[in-house]
Length: 547
Image (cartoon, rainbow, N blue to C red):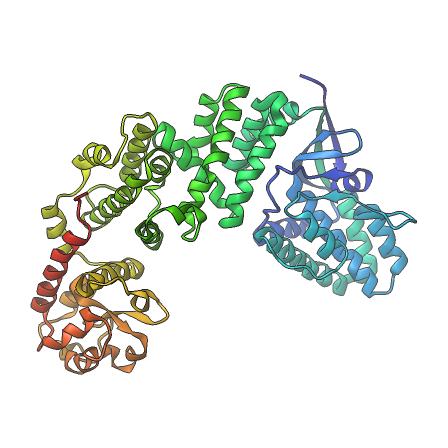
């Protein structure tokens, strides 16, 4: 192992004396408001005594230092210096503002060229340079940009309060404190492999690092002389996912992909499992290549209008929409494997079955969510191993854990639904079955349709509902038979009235299952049970198991 240097410095002084760069593959600015508050509360409480804020790992690139770990603290301190610089300008201490800017933020040559002391990665630096360092208007494109701006504003409030308490001299003292007494340990290595090793070692010693950072670090370490290739692949697939969703989704994608190949892997196990299986350069590059290649499949699962679906039946998008509407994610390893391995004609049939399996399990509670994800991951692994080649083989492989029609029907007849978004989905599908048409946009739009409890959640007077006391009301008001979909314009003052009043405006509804309530003369437990049994029969048809 090449030489590793350790030094101790004030974090401001380290920025002042060096040129620092966040590499392209590092994650964007990630600190939340709580992190900023904690740091500046510590500064307030420790000032003027020395205060240690952790370790920074850098790779010596000759003309500059590449930050392997510590960018959040370095960026936050740079935001502080920018805030102070603007305060000095407002107080007409222009020369001091220019000196501070030159020391800690950016140097300007007489030709007008600018060299940043700290340059963030390619996602954040344009925003940081234009908005923070040069006060120019620029659009907030990324979540990390919003975090940078919120952090700046929080630090601005801290500095303004400090200024109001002690004046400009106390601001100078605060700058001196950040420069000299806010201490860090600098770990400097001469090549990427050493930096990655130190990075992981620090995590073992108690530095809290994300699973995503650890996985990235480990794969880059193993990539050896193909590091540049590994970095490009990582940047490509993580950038695509973050652009479509958010940076937290990156880890989930890696986990779902890994589970589809190796069987269920929990988040806490993911780094260890990858480390156990990926032992050399070729394996690291292969994993990154596959993650990059499968990104579009994952984005198709996340994005209904993804170009991937243009060659598929519209039903496929409808099924993906249902999974998202129900917030079901345990199926994603199976979806990835199926989309990668199955022929196009099998995809629609498989998606329909995945919906039916998921709904049947939600209603019956036959197996827990964790067990279901394990089973879906195991089936995905079998698909990737070539042991399951089509929908029929998948159906036979998993049928032992899928609730039968009779089990599903009986469970549906008595089920209560606490989550409104799930109830809305069930009712919309049942409504579609009654209508016999796909024209459902109005009833699927939460802005136009409310979820209605026929027996109200909070009746104005329980005596208006014969046969119901507090205990029976509690048992029945969330039952599927007591729920319907109602036009928002109609769901107003009458919402908590008795059934006779409510029935009069139900008959004006465009929703068939609501309009049909006009045929009931009363609303008791018997009517709820009868209506729910009818719905249960429909449910067996809607979420059937036939191919």
